[in-house]
Length: 173
View 1 (cartoon, rainbow, N blue to C red):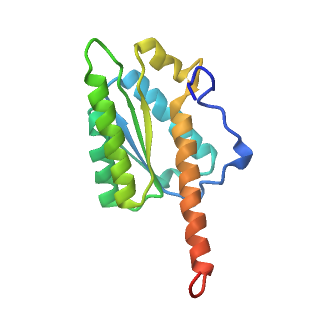
View 2 (cartoon, rainbow, N blue to C red):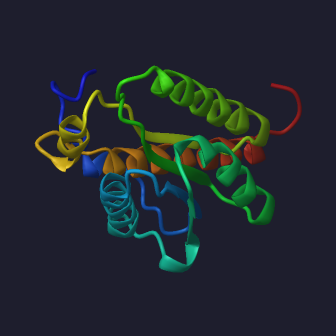
């Protein structure tokens, strides 16, 4: 659904599990930092709001959005996480560079999530211009960082619940 039709910060808090026992990695691109750091604040604050412990959140910064998959892999190689949230912003501009970067990052994060078994959340804005980015980084369409944090909590919950259910099974099902 287009963010013009739904506020990125809206979600049903009652249906979201506590993040108290969850661990999160956050990778933030420094390119377009006015936007990405606002997205990060929304993400971090949402995790804390849902009881994630500060000590269970590790953040690293990478130069740009293109580096998000490698940043996520570095985090995963050094610590166990329930989810890794990747935050970036690629504004279209005058050339097609955005298509190459966005495609590479989305495929990289998808492949990393599948290979590692850890959800790698695509918290990347892909706007046509800076105003669209501002509108989605705490502006009139909410904050994509909030949405990324909620997605991370939901995916970590699914993984945890299925792991618990598997331990209860005995024999062939």
